[in-house]
Image (tube, rainbow, N blue to C red; front, side, top):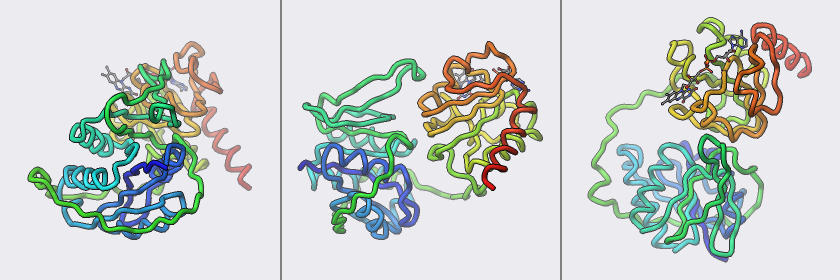
Length: 320
Ligand SMILES: Cc1cc2nc3c(=O)[nH]c(=O)nc-3n(C[C@H](O)[C@H](O)[C@H](O)COP(=O)(O)OP(=O)(O)OC[C@H]3O[C@@H](n4cnc5c(N)ncnc54)[C@H](O)[C@@H]3O)c2cc1C
């Protein structure tokens, strides 16, 4: 069976959920071979084997943390040369997309970004993408070279599928460009205790209708009742009511959770571009004509200051 390279996103050996989702998709098109780099790379092997990796190629070097993406591209290319895979899968983060694009250019392949599904096809893997702010769903196949595909978080379930997961050291020689851009400082973001926005299974967002930073506590309380991440429209972020890191949309983050709850958000195309692939969409808006209602599964026409606290209370009461 053809091998499929899966680029591993991990933090000090803790594998992040989007990588486990990639393993589910990789098993549909071949045998997953994982590539884990940097500090803690070897510690990823257990989780990767548990979810279907037949092999885990590891390489630990300071360059992965000290420089931007090129060392990672060098390593992924080394894995590509060693394995000659049928496809390369990378999580669709900003970094993942840059790594994928650079690798595809180097190996002369086509690249597909932001796939939301993947299946085997007669002429290679077929990716599902959501185009033009999700007005269209497209099926896409790479027509040249080995497909390099980035996949959005929450596009596939995490499935246990125990495999050998044998660890092999990857032989990497860094290119001259690898040390071109050095990381000079790192400031960890203060943890909110909530899940990462792009990976969360549930996202609760607030827009201009929230009407002030002091009212975002309502959105946070609803999010916390569901174990959700908090998102915001650009209008809310530009007004300074919530951090830019939480902006959802074309110029913010792209999310695709199981459940997206939009509160006081009109549904402008630029906002939709970042959330329209969510599985179930709920909106609370006092204007029955708001465009967001065109795409919702459930809509509440009402004042969010009435609806959101009641919803939060009801959810909390049902949790017993
Ligand atoms: C190049 C470009 C990029 C952009 N990128 C993004 C992006 O990434 N993300 C993004 O979000 N936007 C983006 N925008 C901005 C976008 O066009 C909209 O302006 C923005 O999404 C509007 O935010 P909003 O829905 O919160 O505000 P509004 O459009 O003002 O809508 C507020 C909504 O709240 C409702 N409301 C008001 N009070 C209440 C209440 N008490 N209870 C219930 N409902 C209430 C109103 O009925 C209204 O529908 C971009 C624009 C451009 C030009």
